[in-house]
Length: 309
View 1 (tube, rainbow, N blue to C red):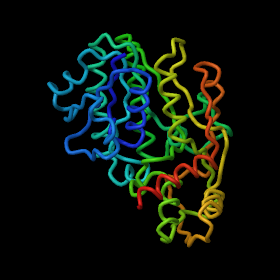
View 2: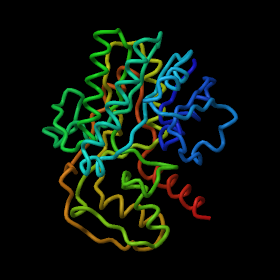
View 3: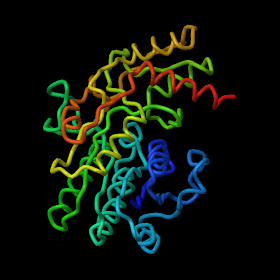
């Protein structure tokens, strides 16, 4: 297949690009001009790269030419930054996506895979684990814009027959995730631990998250692209909850020395617990997470050590 990866130079996007190439697909990456190329350094000879923006219609049309499957991972904010400027959050994420969906609806596209957020679209959970039918009441602009895009996907499916799958991904972590992005507890803790830097925890450390390794997320995306059933939304996580304190203890055990940890007031956009019910993904697309947290932490730590050499 000819695959277009929006945001293919990022943490998740670069892993997806490599995985698609590894199984024989042709890959075109669409990225903003001047993006950091480090994540794709090893695959530039095998991919077609187009730099531009969704506002540049000729570049967007060029990106879509001949494409079978579109993976949409592009974004400009995270849960922390989204609430700081909600206008920017919406205009830089929702509006560009509407241009993408308009172009996709004019093309003979076989499938669109959208990377949404299982950690934010549901808001404060009413039940655990959280299944796909759980009410969606986001408490961050990030969750609202992800949910808004999901709704527009449904609209284009209804009006134009767009074939899509949404992946509601829990807390992603793993190799290449930036420790300065403001998103990714595991990566932040690992990098600060290796540098012997203080680690700031928002709240008392009891917040529970469903941490899913990048390799499992990419496997789910590829399964979703091949899926021919009727379901449109899948939770992608491990179904296992881990507190921030447990992550700190695990990293401390791996590095072999105590971590310097301080605690600050909890942030208003952080939910107290998020554990996803992933049975639908297992039953429909034949996917389940393979990497347990201890193994994923060890991989992330090894990568971070090498990057610091």
